[in-house]
Every structure is written in C-alpha cells, then in structure tokens.
Image 1: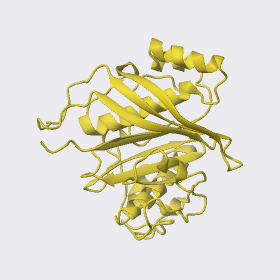
Image 2 (image 1 turned 180 degrees about the horizontal axis):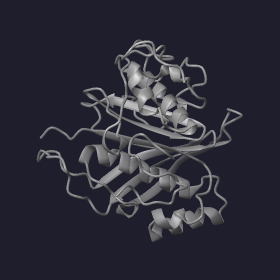
Image 3 (image 1 turned 30 degrees about the vertical axis):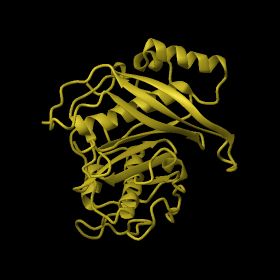
Image 4 (image 1 turned 90 degrees about the vertical axis):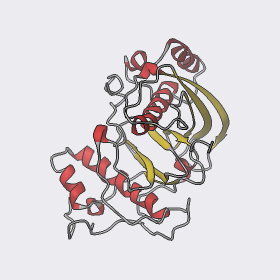
Length: 295
C-alpha cells in the first residue's frame, strides 16, 4: 500500500507508522475522464479502465461518493499543478498519482463539485475542496477514492492491499501479540483472507482517519483491532474468486494530544469502527466517522 492520504510506509517497507501529456492551460486539464456532476451516487463509472465502484461502495455508507479503477488513467487528466508535483517522480508513482486523482475527481463530481487540482499538505494529506472530507488509496492494480460532505462525515480513511502474505518481518512490526495469534489461526486454517494484510490495511485506515482530524501521529501498536466476518460467497465475476465481507473495531490504546484545538463537544475518539471486503484479489478497508450528535 502507498497512499496520498498519509505518506505512510508500504507494507513491503516494514517501517513503523509515520513518526505525460501537458494540460492546455493553468488550472484546467485537457480531459477529466468520466466526470459528470449529474452522475447519480454509486452509479457505474463510464471511465475506460475504471472499476464499477461496487467494491469500494461495499465498505462505505450510501452518503459517501466513491470511484475506483483497475487500470491506469492517462496523465491528461492532471492539472498543471499536479503534473509539477510529480515531475521528478518515477513511473510507478506517476501512474498511482494520476489514476487515484482521476478517481477522486469522479467521486467529487458525484457531489456536484467541479474539477479542481488535488494537491497535498503535511504528511501528504490531500487538500480537499472546502466542505469536503475524503481519502485516497492505491496499490498495484487498484486505485480508489472516497469523498463526502464535511457536515455528513467527520473523517474517513480507506486503504487497499493485495490479498497476499505480508513480506517477512513486517507482521511483527505492525501486530500486537493478540493480533499475531489471530493471523496464525488463519494460516493454520488456510483462510483465503490474508489476515496479516487485512490487519495492515485496517491500521492504515485508522491512521488515515485519525491524522487529518487530530494532526498527531499514531504507531501501529496504538491500535488493537478485532475483525468479524459478515458474509462469504463465490463471486459471479470470473475475476473475483471468493468474496468475503466483514467489519472491524479499532480500540486506540494511546491517544496523543491533538495538535488542533477541539471544542468540548468533539471529544477525541477512542474507538473506530469500519468495514472490509475481499474481492478481485484485493483487500479494502474503510472507516467513516460520523459527526458528533448535537448536545
């Protein structure tokens, strides 16, 4: 996993959690594929090479707009400011950056938002339009983005991973003893779900939800995650294999003091809940934090 949301490390890195074609005019891309402000929420994307959105929507509430892709978008979808950002990047990074922003603008269009450059701030957190919260994710072969009105969703995080075993040594750097035991139980049962990857993805979604909201960092050991399975069935899509869906709860064991001032009615969250899915050979996790109830 790599993601524009946090700048967190890839699963292959084993590191701790974070302690083309030119556009025609400035501020306007040559083409933003598949964007339409009138596209109904959750509708099938018409962008060539894009996903149906079914997988990403499986882990998100209906009020969240989202888009995904299994193939790459052309760099003509980028704004000049975005092209400048990746001018010195290697090819793999350019492809990830380009396609996930095409997905993000498709999702924003579902909210009626016009296409705008999507640059990054501290820790590579995307700078969304005013009044919008969102998250992006990309791994080899899959990209996705999700957005929602800020009055409807307080924060969110999504993360995608290939359903493959973690590289050697990574499990011990991300998992608590109880979580390691759960991973080992899945290995003994030959579970189709690669539990180590699922855990990594869920912890990334925790961080992506936490950091933009609080402005402080968490370590992998700061979240104790429990998973449940809600459905398992044979997919009708010949590329899908076995589809599995479920939920997870992250109990935050340490909640660093927020950098940003917080009203008393917006307490620091100590538990986050999310959904996960296995499909098309990928694991996807998501957390959406609703607004605090009005006192």
